[in-house]
Length: 344
Length: 199
Image 1 (tube, rainbow over the protein chains, first blue to last red):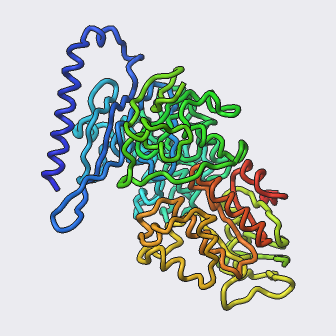
Image 2: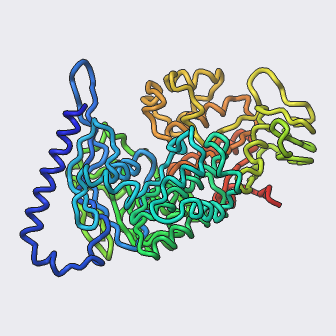
Image 3: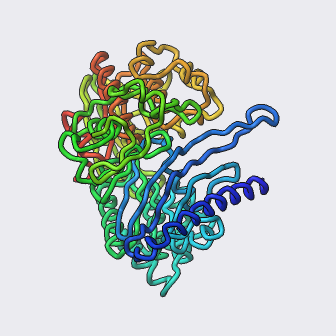
């Protein structure tokens, strides 16, 4: 296990070296760029694979994220939308460096222009980068929730900060002294959001923070995110629910089968979706209940059965012979990004 | 067919009443929505109608006869989290075999692929697994479906796929559906009327 981990560090370091070389060559450009224009987080060509044992000592590699690019600026909310199994949570875990040991990562991730190597990830997580986890199982089952939230406060009076946040989310005084098993699903979600707000992180990664919550609490959570972003925080909102994303995000990245197929400003998700760039984003938009509610056929391919060319080609009505052969490169189009050779 | 809950009162142990003097009626072929803040008793009501909980007050009847306590239940509940609703140690084929009288067409209508039958639940995505939970609920004896946040955890395309198939099957068999959800747009699209529990 340890040796694999070391190996990982080595691959990451090697990538970093490559980046440093690039940086040197473009040193003059770097100097002119001040802090406000460097993205808070930049993920470039990230690929993640798991090594699995098949039979005996034979191993195989399972690629779950392929050549993924995203970036988040200060004060921006980027929503990552995609169906389950598209690699959204894995991206979050990769940024924080909390993936299991049998994982091989390639590509690079920069936080404020500094490469996220495991040592730096360990220093930053829980302080500058916070995660609102997807599963309610992430809370400590044996610690009262008030204490859990207080323990993540980095500056100021922990009790006061925790109480203020709880009040905001309609959590009564008695909730401070409850254990996770005594809370309802909605309350647990609010506790998870509270822990991230309490530690005043610069980058918040929220992994499905709202499903199963009623409209009032969803709106309160969304308002909190907006306020944090307006203070200069970067927020990555991971969700399968495009409607929540539309209410709050500045840009939306659409995930499909482990890669970003499109990054679009939120305004493009309107009308009949003609401003969208990728056929999958269009299909997603048209399937919403307040639009056509008409789905396209088929299913997202699992990681062990990825098609050779464009990952969406088997379900795409615009697909041509080239689509089935080569994975299209990410290209900029109308202030966004798209990975489709037919996009215009 | 007429599913009716009359003067239903329910509480867990000695806590406050979650539901009191609550009346609901659902006719065959009818699609009704149920909305309300979390903790107001939506799921509890679904469980009562499907026979998982017995109300302390009032009664649930199907065509004026109390719900049966043995055999295949005519009111079937579909949950929000399919991974919690199937046995993790059973292959999907066995999960479906539990339903003795299942129409082959249903598997096709729901887009369940033959190859999935030989997989374990953890080898399927949430959307794929939820299709099995829907198929499992649709034996020939099913008259009513309670869809408790059935597609909340799924993406828009999968949600539309599953709902389109369910609507079609329900229409063909003249089944009634109670849709429990937080999403106004979804309820507006599916239901002829919506009950708001917060009022």
